[in-house]
Each structure stands twice: as structure tokens, then as C-alpha cells.
Length: 380
Image (cartoon, rainbow, N blue to C red; front, side, top):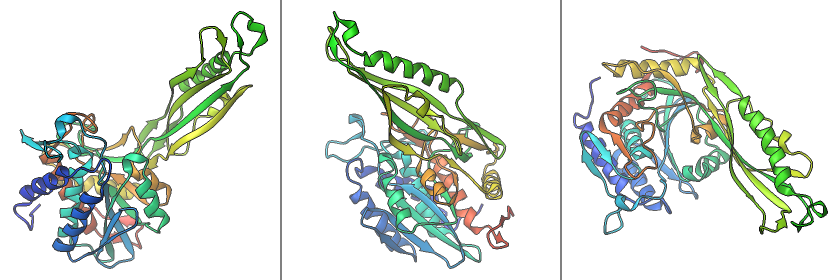
């Protein structure tokens, strides 16, 4: 693909370096300022920033909108990822960039910004750039944007999809798991441990609930999305009960991590046996691309950009903002530079080649022709 900006690789590295250097684990305002000003100074779009800190900009005029979305908050850095002056450390080695946020997901965000600048939208297509805050806090920024009316027909979400089906390739995620975190609380009656019959042991009741959860885990739901399958899971991850070695416990709590799949949930309520109550603490929705033609079109674009490998449609094991967008009616796929095992680590890094591939994919897809009132996408 011929690039209008011949130094785009250098631009990608430079912009990634700029975005990564700005701390955004507690407060993403400063990096949001940089993104907002970059759009204003480098594109013909008008950027808007809502009260939450989300940044949204639009280019082109059309009845169909396709968004390039990401987030500019990160998790807490490791101490080795912070410089003496409080900025994040970024190093370059062996065609990779190292530092907090390189993979998750400021490398892909830089690719989306440059692609947004360089895209020539096909007739009838509006291109949208959106960077949310609070993805690492359960997607609070994406939820706020949706509540305020953010509803593109299509979205390419820049979370990781590189090296999922093979090395040196950026695949296309068509589905991912959600997460429902919940708590079972077993209630009993305290008594002295020397008089067992005078109390009701909450830990025993919790054990009965755990037996049921183990049965549910062995029969976790499976969903089909196009030609792919994605499996859910149920796991007890924490247990807390008892107050002393000589006291029959009157409460015991169990934390459950359930990975949900599109359209299906494990019946956790079955574990709420006598004396046990169930409460949901977090419910992050799964994502499934509801338009196989769009997913195929994006995969074809990715295949045209790769020279030695063939990207595939894949699934992703954890929740992203694509779940909230999909749940609100946006047709989503995920294409991003991060590889499995890179995000949130002390050695977090991203391939410069992968960032450049993402730029090319992001730039090419909105240039495809949307036929018959967004019913079909061509792969020319």
C-alpha cells in the first residue's frame, strides 16, 4: 500500500513515545490534552471532549459511521517503567517499544490517530475517532459516551489481536468473553466450637454452594460466532469466613469469577442454596460481531496488508470496551497491536511492525465501499 506520508513509521514511533511518556494511571487528563490538541492541529476534524474526559472527533459526511476506538488510561506502572522525573519510561529495542501502555494500548491509539488523519473516506461514510477513559475501571468512559448518544454503526476497537492465530500477524477478533464477578454469602449462627449443635456453620453451607459451582464449571456455556467458538468458565477465586479457631462461623463469603460468552450465562443462582445469598459485583458484557460480512471485509483488508502470513478471525479471552459498544448495537471487531501476555506486565512492549500494520488496516477499512445502505461491505 502506498502511503501518503512516507515517514509514517517514524511518526508512529514518535507519537507512541509521546503518548506513553505521559502518566495516565490515576488521571488521564494530561494525555487527553495531547490527543485533543493533536487532532485539532493535524486534522480537519473538530474534536469534542465530554465531562468524563472521552475524546471524540468526526470526519466525512455519510449515513454510515465507522469508528476507530481505544482508551488512553492505563494500569499502574511498575517502578522500572517510571523515570526519575515521574514520566513513564519508553525504550526502543529490536523493533519493539517497551513501557507502560505501549501494548495496552497507546501504540494502537497512535496508529488510530494517524489513520484518522490520513483516511480518505468512501462515499457515504463518516469516520469517527474515539478515545475513552476508564477502560481499566470497567469501561466507565465507554458507558458514559454511549449514554450520551455515541452509537456508530461499525467500530474497530484497538485492543490486542496480534499473534493470536500465528506469529507476525495481526488477526481480527470477532468475539470476546465478558466477566461477571459475583459473591455468594453463606449465613449461619455463631456458637462456641465445643458446642457444635448450638450453631449453624456458614462454612459448611458455603461448601455446599462450592460443590454446585464445580458442577457448573464442568458444564460452562459455549457460544458460536460465525465459524469460531468461544467457551465460558466459572471459578471460585476467594473465600473468607470465620473469626476464631474456637467459634462456629456465622458468615462465609465466596468470590466467583465467571467468564461469560455471547448470549449465554452459567446459572450461578443454583448455588444460592438454603442460607446462601447471591450478589453481582461486576458485569462486563461479552462481544460478538453481528455482521459476518463486515468481519470478513476487515479480515480481507488485513490479509491484503500482510505479505507473509494470513490473518484469521479469532476470539479473545477477556472483556474490552467492545463489549459495551456491541451491547449498545454497534457492530464491532477488534484489531490491535498488542500480543497475548504483554498488557499490564513489568516488561510490557509492542512491535513497531504491528503498530504499522494496524495503521494500514485502520486507514484502509473506511475507504471500502458500503453497499446497499450498509448491508454489505466490499473487499476490493
